[in-house]
View 1 (tube, rainbow, N blue to C red):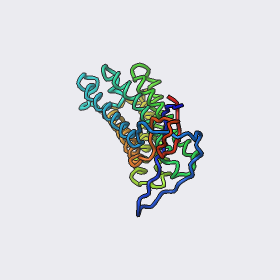
View 2 (view 1 turned 180 degrees about the vertical axis):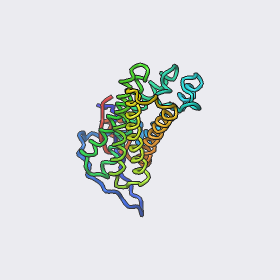
View 3 (view 1 turned 60 degrees about the vertical axis):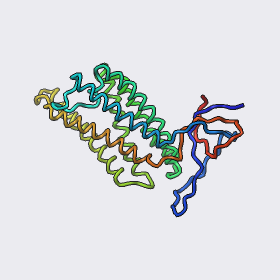
Length: 273
């Protein structure tokens, strides 16, 4: 019989003359000895590019629409990302694109997990690290599914999960990389520092306003925090790009098992379809 499945596969290694090879870890025995053929494949790098395009398309489109309908006024006060996702049609555009983008990024990060495993040689620790990103992406789905007008507290919890998990994830991931690029680690640390500053300033100013100690923070203060949020988001995208720009050997593929063919790849994870 022939079974269709969605699987992550690792392409057979190609030897490149004159190029140093990275440390390899023996592959785990396959759970199925049946040969398989790849019908359609998407490399982890391609999934990363799709994630980036969806991010910029969603933010760019909703920024323009929200400016045109008067929901935000960038010249007077720079908006938070979520401020652009309140009024129609931006609320529905963001609902679909943020949630779908989170799913694509989730698949991308599974590819990144398999991409980094041979380099790190500590599968359990690497899995624990990537769980941070996957939990953070669940928080981003909350942000997309529930805007700040519908349920502010739930929305803020989702945003806190997303930013907190990924600040920690990107710093540890960049630091642990055997081929660590200083620029990637610097950006990740800067993003974490910016987010920590946003939290401290938000709590201090918010607490002062609630106690009546000072007047509410001026628009310039909100613009600063919102601009830092945008900078943190862009830092995450840069770190994601730097971590996967060479990840062509791990692919998400539609495969057919029991076909008598063999693609020369190693199945890493599969799910029947």
